[in-house]
Length: 146
Image (cartoon, rainbow, N blue to C red; front, side):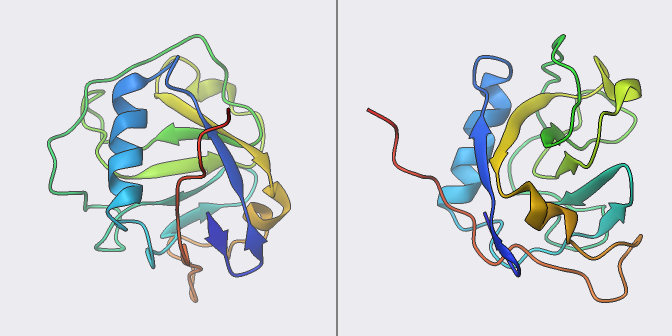
């Protein structure tokens, strides 16, 4: 994921959430995330993106996903699937945690982890919404490791 300040490398976790990882890969390969805003960025909590409307109320053209909750905790750099109050309403939006967020454990789907570039996530403009929101410049899949 390319941000204004640099690249962020994310390791997807199909072992935890195969349906969510499949959806993310599909959307990334379609260019869905390129140019989308971080519309909700709360210091000490998380940065949320993935809404083409930029309001938090939008999603992709695909149906919502069933929850894939796991025992994996929400730590600094964890990617979670954003959703409404309905556990089975995740679609394209996701968030990246700035810190350990135990109250999310078992309540949201974990599907990835930042493995490099978290300092760039830390620099995303804050606000709900931020006055000058940062965007995902480009998101792409790295070649599979041998």
